Image 1 (cartoon, rainbow, N blue to C red):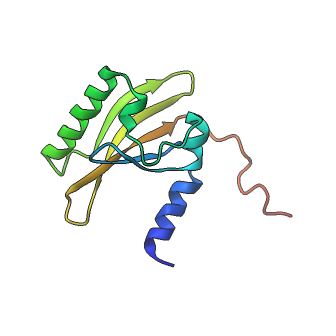
Image 2: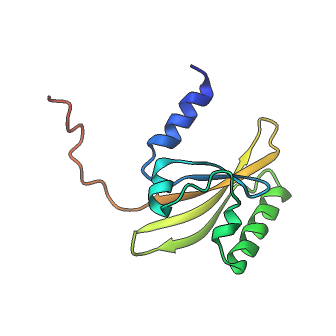
Length: 122
């Protein structure tokens, strides 16, 4: 197995939606949680197709900010009180630090309710 297989598995196992876009705003990958949440697989399509003009302008501004500096890598975009989560846009960079895309990161703030290590006593 290659390292990329492990990284893909991390994204695939995440319960939060992950939509990865390139710099042309084409969706290059969606995990299962994203497809379930948005009820459509947008892979190969522009993320801008499903946003209003004002949102698309904000996406462009964030990507321009990412491009300004290799230190500009994460930006808080919104709070969803109903789901108790914060949402961020995160820059994706290659090994040399060049911007190659971005994704939206959902951070849920609910405390875990599962019993620690439940299921190991089978």
